[in-house]
Length: 75
Image (tube, one colour):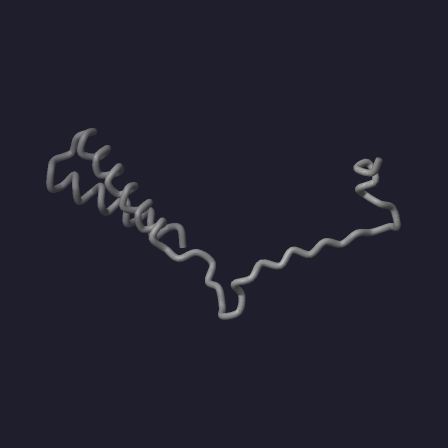
């Protein structure tokens, strides 16, 4: 799965080098452009998919033992 983006980055750099000539400026600019496009695509993806009814956040606390954790607040 991770090989495909590397191949696409290599193809973009090779294509830019063939079109504009091979120089460090062209390679650097192509890598920068591909990186920016990758960041935009990554930020545009949806996060974890929530199913209907999963909008609530449930926080569950479990206390073990019979001691009081808040006894230092008592006077």
